[in-house]
Image (cartoon, rainbow over all chains, first blue to last red; front, side, top):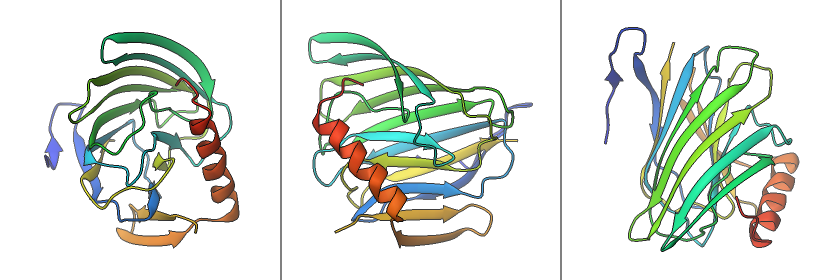
Length: 164
Length: 41
């Protein structure tokens, strides 16, 4: 999957950067981001080297400013959780199977709350989550980190798009 | 051994694999701890 531009009037998603995580890396960090209204982070076929969980942080902020509301389905059971956290969290599942996710982050150019909408699944696993999140940091978004609690395998691609 | 951070400077398009800072490593360990404790989110 590689789209350089999704041209819509007032909603032109431009590819900012795309990378394949290198082995032994636990954080893919997009820094020095210019002013954008929205960012779209797409994770295609990435995997953990050992069982781990993934998450996203804004502006390298690891304080409790992230409200997560997660509807999760694992095999035959579904749950709904709401939590104040130090990151936009993963779900409960850990693992090394390839994961696919899309994170839409809005209001990035304002001092108000930033809004997250996320979909997430894993290859070959009966596992899906849908998530809504709010980040209450006041600075505009200039850095986005995609994180794992272990390390990534050198596989798949992380894409970052932006709308100015 | 500390994992690395893959930093993509989107202004210069420079990609660098660097060692975690002390503060980043502390956060990494805390995240791992929470993950092992089985936090539900």
